[in-house]
Image 1 (cartoon, rainbow, N blue to C red):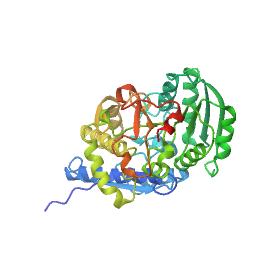
Image 2 (image 1 turned 45 degrees about the vertical axis):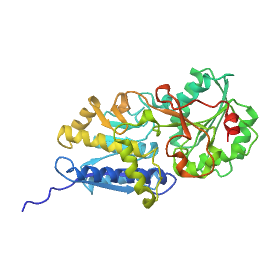
Image 3 (image 1 turned 180 degrees about the horizontal axis):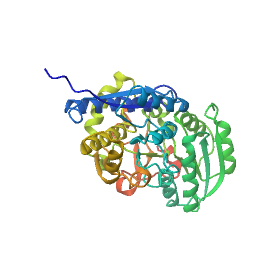
Image 4 (image 1 turned 30 degrees about the vertical axis):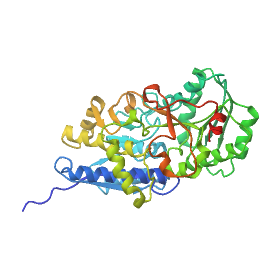
Length: 397
């Protein structure tokens, strides 16, 4: 009897504990769903797929050692990138030294300065990621009446926020909006009232926030309890995309305008995405992860679809062959068709801006169909109109 073929081993790390655990654990479940799907169809190249995933604990200093272990001790066939800018940036030196094909998940501008030819980004920010993440917020603002003219920039003092703030400054200049206040806060911040106090003193028309999950909760609470009402607020917050944050904040999210990469609206229903979400949501409760998965799941699954398509098309695991294929071909994914361009970014940006409207209470199901997060930009993906100014969205509660 012939021996069973050896599995294809794909290695990576995720922040399964620490401040990014909610999003990372959603990605992990999605990867497991992909693994089961691909193995049910016979695996890759006739071999089953095995995923080797370690917890980096959201500690970037652990990441290089994890990838060294994956390559030198676990002898994985391929490595992929974990979730987020901090993790990916820490992995890149070793990946570049070993000249590995590398598809990262939601890292913003990771390859801007490195220009590593074998890196590919699973994030729809396009060839100018810093600007694309934030442009929709400023473009929308510039279209309103009366037209906003000033902005306050508030961000966490962390690596992930540096590129969005650069993009925000560039877009503020592009749309002739003056930066009247800029501040960073430590990730250890618990009391955000002084942060909002300082912004209120400037009476800025726009409040642009670049925050982590827990920070987003603190900032939203601090703003709502303050008398200050900017005309628009949000922009580059990591948190409102996550179901746990939505559930905790509930109506406090009303009026916020923030980026998204996918939303459950008719124009974003690419082939296979609803079936994927059905499977994920059926398992999410038992796994103790985000019950809806709108933020992480489509991109995490698409990440693996890219890897699979490249392996099957090239017939193996040669890193240079995989990278050459990825630079030239179109990938069919649950995020739609993807083509990579400059620095491995998507050739065309597809960042959404959504506004939270009509949220009442803290029930999860109200977010399931997209009726509470309205896509207000770009026009080709929109599902409704912006409520402006921010205070008007509060009176509609």
